[in-house]
Length: 423
RNA sequence: GGAGAGGUGGCAGAGUGGUCGAAUGCGGCGGUCUUGAAAACCGUUGAGGGUUAAACCUCCGGGGGUUCGAAUCCCUCCCUCUCCGCCA
Image 1: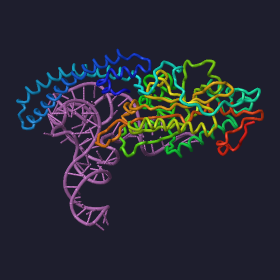
Image 2: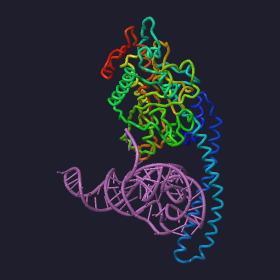
Image 3: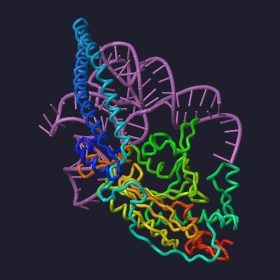
Image 4: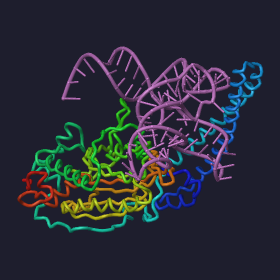
């Protein structure tokens, strides 16, 4: 969440920054400022009463010790009175602070000044495009037909055992999937990320820490019996490693990578563009996460999308890099790049990675700090990116590498697959 | 699922209802000593809020209660560990 201190000190700037997202936060911000001021005034009074109360208790203690029970009586009386007064004050401070907190939590992150203003995907900026459209042979098929033709992904079987959006990968389809995971993890390790395996369910605290809760509750599968959520991305468990952690400055940056399946309810997103692997309830993804010094986070953001581009290039997939406009970014992000891979048979771009700098939005919620040179604790910055999300990569590989003889496996994956053609 | 134990500062581990934010040990940091290091010794070392700086306030799993005063007593919830059962 945004730091209250920022709102307090620069309300105008916060409003201005949020306008990059196309939202008008003036009303919310002014409410926050007003209520915060009130809360602080009440808190000051409350604390001076508490100080008096503590002092009285000490004095009573002294008197009791030295046997002067009678002399303690008037002090006790005063203490009881203070307690009466305190009760109301405490309630008001608590409710005011809760209101302030809820308002602050409801605000999305303030975008970086380098983020283009805009409301929807149409205002995103294409930064670079790499490679070119593959020339497909006559009768080229979309990946869902290829999946059936070569019997490598069984959507119907998934429907039977679970439901729509839970495909079953079979044979070379399953092996291709495994090869990609292996390839991505190895690349990440080589780039200095610590590989981890994490739980696929998280508690509510973790969901809050990375920004999924309370706002995106409906996007996660929830198990009420145990009060746990299926992870929508490895970002959630991995970033929460650093909840309530104070790092030494010398430990930064902390780089972590993990493969997990991701579970998303995708409520209300059924339609023409969700066929095949385009949008699933369960999919595989390798994620990279970094906790960094605030001064370096924007450089790291550039490094991270460059790293992801490297993966796509090694796979030989035509892609483009987008700088998201304010309105198309997730609420926790200060700046996001998306990578979209070209889907040859569908003739459209598919998002396969999203790389974001959250600045202190997550670390503030997580209380993830580091000790700076002055020896004071300071919020770190967090970033993450998909490296990569598998289904759309699989879709692109199947479609773009198809030939009349079968689907050619990209060179770099052959050692992992153990075959070079799907036929 | 059954039975029991426990949740205190980075870790370990004390704590009689009354200067306890909390003994002690380890670790960390600074220093003395040393050519250097180790050892030894001395000092220092939780977080958040607040203040120019202090004062001061909050926090001993969460929430509620008793009391002038709660880490300590009561209620409640959560979590962890051990044993048994079941099981990959």
